[in-house]
Length: 395
Figure 1: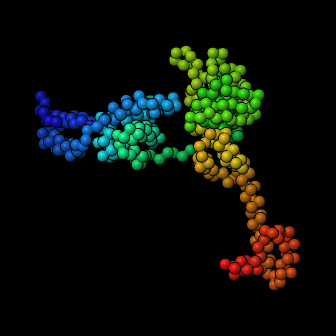
Figure 2: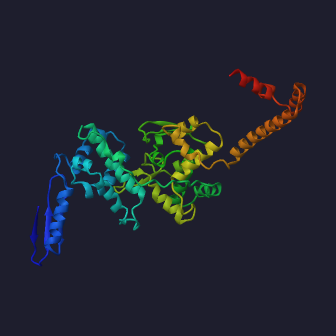
């Protein structure tokens, strides 16, 4: 820690303390440098030295816990933690636990940055995933007794933008037409979109589907690499069967995947469906707001609207709990099947209300009985005013 005067007359402040990022800044006057030095000393309260976030990350990536995670999860965590380590990597774990404001500062600054790839501001979803990667690190530290609890779980993160996009029949019909396109790239992309819609699976599961796991004769297939690390057998609907048959006819001989992409080394790798979606948007086959999860949402929403039991839907889609399906059960009361059910309920309530009104006008049990017979009311399911009074007196 110290202030030195530079040849140009300015003053350079350098603060180095283990467990904190290096502070190195140039000021116009010595007074400004001294004020900054005082502020830095107050902020960097010395606590027990410990492992830094960078060191923790290296240890985590070499651990059994990390190696047992799905390959896609490993790739995602490695990618998402990079910008976090660039800003917070020099912090010791204990100092970060003591001063979680540094994490909030990181999110604030990150939200103002522009992605060099997309040329737009970093989204809340991206920031949330980056903090989730940090949380995975701290969760690992907790298992190794380096911290008492995962303090990142208490950090308020940007809210996820709720998706409601579905696949209307005209759009799905257009996709299925282009599934037979003479352009193999367009056809493959359209088949992939249609298959997700008809199977209700996650796009990441379908892109890794192996040819050997297809049993078209039994209308069944197996997803191996699922979100929760288990195998799942699912039913192949007739529309999905058509899409898979079409794709198998075009699948290269050297590929073990049903949907594949040529990798950088020349080998066939799981399908890059993001590129396929961009192609379909470019050709106006799907809308500009289309995203791949829309097909899965459409499958689940239509299943709920058609009164398919939640337990049955879960077996097909691989959701861990019934509660996880409830996010799809919104705004569906105007679906034809739901309207019919509500109308039947309304008719029943209307009949009961009419019966109650007429019975209220009756003065004898004989008159009430005739009213019930005329309206065809079910005596077993009807509670008269006399019965209600009797039940009340018995309480």
